[in-house]
Length: 136
Image (cartoon, rainbow, N blue to C red; front, side):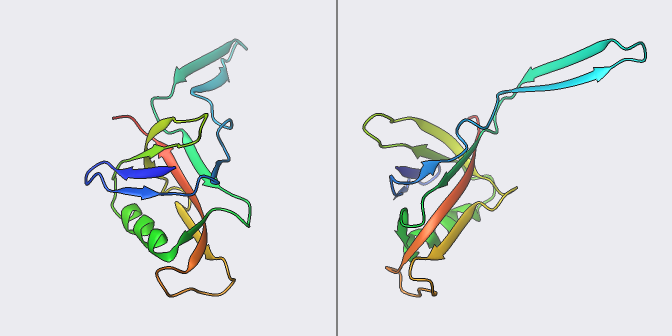
């Protein structure tokens, strides 16, 4: 899996053991149901243009990245509105998504694998990431 900055085209490799945990929890259809004073039902429906969440997480013993990778992700997330291409690189799944970091939720979670802070750029961290799919 990789994340590509759409401005600089810089690529960052991510662990393939990150799993899309909320892949089937979203619907492109938004609806509201209301009743009139006479009791009639009014159903309003529309199709969402963007905003599908893509939350990537893993089991506690998986998805390790270096501190340098965590810092790059944090630097990228600090650029408001920056778009990225998320590319899956599995043998049976090569989908690509245009995404932004989901700042309405915690976009990056990182904790040291060893249980205490790592200060070297090659110390290992366990990560989870939250994105939103956007349109061009």
